[in-house]
Length: 83
Image (cartoon, rainbow, N blue to C red; front, side, top):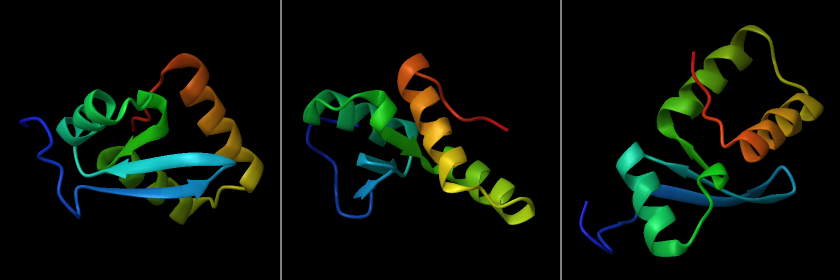
């Protein structure tokens, strides 16, 4: 992805879990957000991470405290969510 090629639909910005987070369509969009917007990778959830969270939530819904803990761990360890 070339500089400043982010377009509408590549990502969503929202206030959740007590901070600003982003949902990015792909890893390359995440990388571009980090590079061009000076964002922390821990602020950005990829589509793949979101799909994993949604699938899990369908079988055993998350509590707000569980989502906050996941987000805190993602931030502290620079982790990604995988299935």
